[in-house]
Amino acid sequence: MHRAIFLDRDGTINEDVGDLYLPEKLIFIPRAIEALRILQKRFLLFIITNQTGIAKNAFSEKEFLHFNGYFIQLLNRYGIDIKQVFYCPHGKEENCICRKPNQYFIREIEKRYSIDLRNSYVIGDHPHDAEMAYNVGAGSVYLLTGHGRKHIQELSLEPDFIADDIYEASLLIMSRINAVTNR
Image (cartoon, rainbow, N blue to C red; front, side):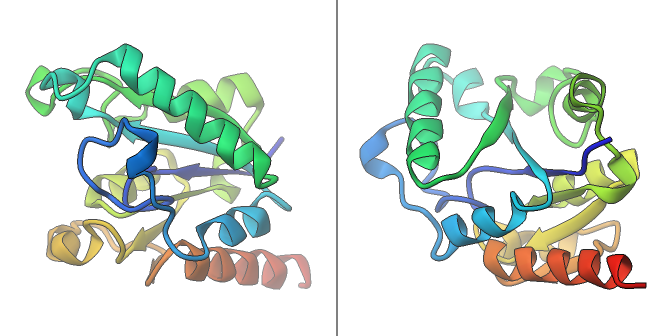
């Protein structure tokens, strides 16, 4: 069985500029690439992202997929291997099964990639990321980047860690993994 990191995208890996679908608007959060390199040494990396911009017609699904291809290729050039990207194109009011904090995508990944959820983590800047982690028994790291500071009071569950950014999150997770391994 494999360990995994389930990453939010906007506000976690890249700056949340709102409705991101144009390559020229992509800005990586400082040290995000370094953090992903650290994490992929011990974990498979996946992105799970709610993309309500599709539902509200800010951009099309085709535009999202084009941008996503660019995003993944760029990460590949930096030596980052994202195994797969899962996205919810629905609005909150649609009550779909794939929108975070629902477990749908994580359960799909668990089956397809033989994931050990108890030794995996969700990293994101919204309370629903921490809730999704809790719902599947994974660890959680709540980030203060993106919308993190704005929504921290909305956390209904205590995450395993609260980190300033994904780089700090990577160090906290690796420290915990190393502590468990060295016992």
